[in-house]
Amino acid sequence: MTYRLADLPQDAAALAASLSDLLRPLAACASLAEARRALSTLASECQRRAGEADAGAEGPERAIQRDCARAFRSLASARSEGLAGFSVTQALWDLACGRPRPDLEPGFCADLYHLALGLQGRADGPALVASRPAAPGLSGRALAQHRAAELDRLWAMVEERVGRFPTGLDPEVRERRAARRDEILSALGGRADDWSDWRWQVGHLLCDREALERTGTLTPAETAAVDAATASRLPFGLTPYYASLMDRDPEAGRDRAVRRQVLPLDAYVDAMGQLREGDRCALDFMREHDTSPVDLITRRYPAIVILKPYNTCPQICVYCQRNWEIDAPMARGALAPWETIAAACDWIAAHPAVREVLITGGDPLGMADADLERLLERLAAIPSVELIRIGTRVPVTLPMRVTPALAELLGRYREPGRRDVAVVTHVEHVYEITPDLVAAVDRLRRQGIGVYNQHVYTYFVSRRFEAAALRLLLRRCGIDPYYTFAPKGKDETRDYRVPLARILQERKEEARLLPGSRRTDEPVYNVPGLGKNYLRAAQHHDLVSILPDGSRVYEFHPWEKNVMPCDSYAGADVPILEYLRRLEADGEAPADYASIWYYL
Image 1 (tube, rainbow, N blue to C red):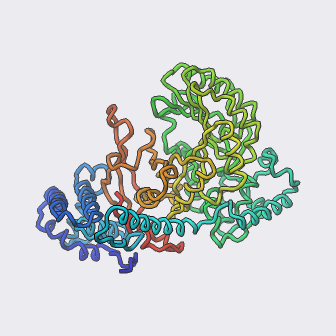
Image 2: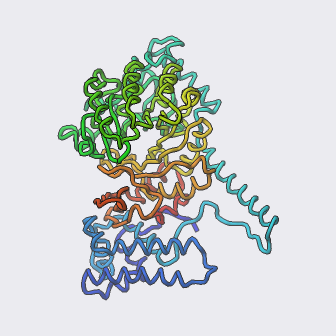
């Protein structure tokens, strides 16, 4: 059966018709409290019947039924309604009683429809691999050989899907980029040897439409957004090197992930312009003001702190979590006064519980070698500091910055058995991985410095097996997958956000097919003021509501929930239907993602 978004219920009347069996017990209820009990009882009864089914019954449907029953019991809770400010039970009760609910949008209807099917053991949507070869009567070596053939078939599917995405190491891509390099050098009046000089690169940052048009091709929408960003004085700019990763034919779509890193969307520019007219701290989604005991320090966990000595970067990512702090790429005066840096280091020394320091900002590798050495010398003198991490994107945006001298400088502060130094970078897509990046990583690794990747799972890198392709290539380049971040729930970056269900789907379907060393990253959601919430296990978050537009509301339970009393955090996601419609408009088949509804 073909899976089509157009076939899903689009309004309250269609939803009521499709959920008649589920709604029937609610129609007899005299109050909302009674309707809550009826819905919860119905969910438990469906789960009980599934548990009493024959042992040979299909496993996936039973597991989905269990998860959907748990979800409906949560949706029926009065506490959930209080957290979300909306009652799913009230909406379903109204539908059962024939009361109009024009506020229920297609996203809500689609989500409830799928959850109801799952509850009834009728989960909708095909698997990635449609059939499994039968093996009647086989055992031992014969069964093992049959299983090996099946796994070969699975891996062939992986390779086919991964092969959709060209990488920056492909010969034809390297050839195009060599031509782009020459074109950009000519436009900027540079010589061939300037390209590998990081100081020349940061001296020729592309910070407005005119510079970009001299060195590449913008779409009309990108031109308008860049002009608006410049007029609003939003932080914007990219290195000539990174501009060379953008193709002359953007309509081909190979470089869309690269472009979306730095070329803002109009909705982002509009939202940022409005917010900046008021309190800039409204953009502080992670509430760093509330977790900064002294200037330059952020502390959310017992044994690690963030140190921010340098408040700019060679290149500005559109969805940066600190877009409220950064003024411009490589802005003058971005290095904090040394007395302030020294005071922050003194604070770390006075708190020996702190065993690890993450130097970030801004991008600390934008600092001069001498300044970086002075900082590292001070941190290395603190007896309690056992690990120094450098958070940087320069291997991706400015790989020539990782000179042999810089790599040696960082390696100098490794003292095996006493102190380690690591680099955490941020590669978003295989199209960003170039021979220059590989060489920069190799220089660090030869100094004994581990290199790790944090992947922000935005819409523009979320197609089937897009992240899997990245993980496979990262390990070949000597980079360990570390975290997959759910985009933060900031209004200004809504167009970058992905439903949490898609992250869980990717983790349990696509990443699960990879060898273990290729899927070592952990999917997380950053809870404001509290830090990372792990998404892998259900006990770390609960689905508490589905809003009328289809946004799921989750309650996140902070990392310290079993250690000390703490408050949870409730946040709204982006609607799954909205996400699938965007994918469909971009040429993806919604049927490939149909199981997304059952990741809760």
